[in-house]
Image 1 (cartoon, rainbow, N blue to C red):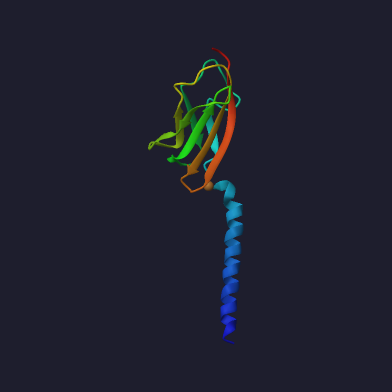
Image 2: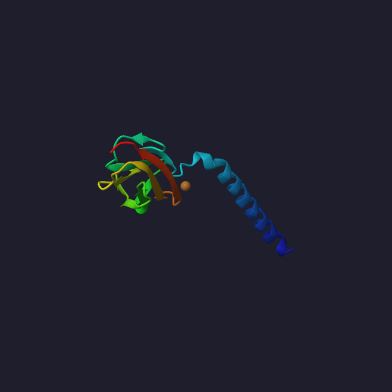
Length: 131
Ligand SMILES: [Cu+2]
């Protein structure tokens, strides 16, 4: 009879963990992971000239010092890398691209640390039509 209360306790603990796990899964869509919600230029955009900066906006706060954005030009060469943020816009990251030039398909890749501890990463393309 010494074992009984302990078994009950463990069972209760397991049940609690399961309930919390199920709740977490159910609540997942409501939790604002820092997915990309907007970008300038945006995915599939056609712009007349190479942009001087890439701006990404996420669904939640991001940590600039643990985040990276890169841009590849039409030749696949990385022409800019980094990410800066401002305290008053915690969901935005900017990559200055002063050396970006030339027409064609450009690829933006990002890997960011969300303030909730998750990593969000992805890539999209945009097109420079002119020049
Ligand atoms: Cu998250």
